[in-house]
Image (tube, rainbow, N blue to C red):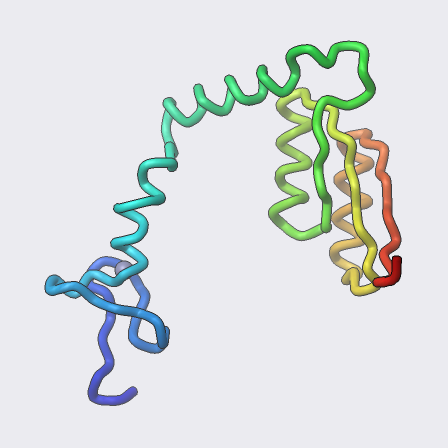
Length: 132
Ligand SMILES: [Zn+2]
């Protein structure tokens, strides 16, 4: 660490981030951005749960009798695997699409298989070769 090393007074970010800036209280630009932008759209509480229920009902409305009510990209990574699991829990019927571009890890493939089997999804895999 050099003499100019500084750590945010509020979070773990520090001057090893070449883009970081600090205000007079030592609060980093990431924390400032969170307060200014993200916090207004982030509801980790009952209000967020209520908003989410509304969105789910909106997705389901008007598509009764159709095979799918949404589309879900499944890479096999933690985020899309968890979302696929939650969509099942919420009673959604996603068209599950996976793009195989040739660099799937064994773990990603295992996650895809496990999620698809658990949720009884039909998986649509598109093999992408990079050519049209
Ligand atoms: Zn910070």
